Length: 342
Image (cartoon, rainbow, N blue to C red; front, side):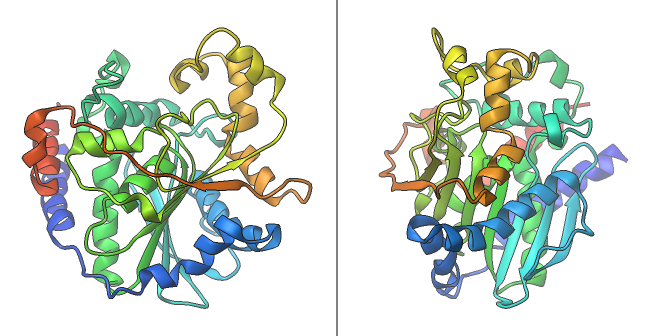
């Protein structure tokens, strides 16, 4: 069974990397209302446009596919055993709009037993799979029991997109998600080549998307990526989260956050989750957990976020020989390496 699944991934990946559909040039205009509402709209306009996307990201966590989102229809569910989970929604008022919501790391109020699997997928994306030069920890021993092709959420997401493209060849895609789901959304939007996919990403973790993309050896355009986060969320590194449109919710600093970073940088999320009663754990709960973000978006007493457009600076490739890699060759090499897992 495992061998068949691996073969499926190989065939599907080839289709996903070569069968891009040429965009008709209208996708930027299609999502202009959302972009404008986030960048400069009133609080009411912001909530009206971002609220449904946040609800989709929440449903990607709960998998409560029976929960209705006004104005949107669920058209497809994608799930791998202990792997990626995502949902696709089509607008009921503009059939050209299609949103893909990717589940993030399951923890705290979102935990359904898959925290370790998702954290391992995060490590795989950030470290082992893409060989990031700035944070080389390698895949933890506890993660090595999981086959690499299961941990490869990025390529699983590409397969889901390829499947949707076969059914919706002309629709304009927008990706959304929280935490790890936000990172996937940002990468997928920035590296979409022949069609103008957009992303509205909630608190990406890891947030060093340009470094990850650079290490993949893929050209990127971050102009369609919007990132929303709490200004005190230690998971969103302000030094690496400089791409696209960056929007931060501003307010008083939680006391736990001030204590957490009093004499050291904010630790990795995997360390924080080991002790959620620590100051860093409480800070994570009050700034990064999706329940906090949902409340911040919908609470009448909070302000809309402040948005800034970032001038992205090219990050050097981790390896010189990656400069000549194409997206197809790089992704295929990663998958072939993963097939060696038992």
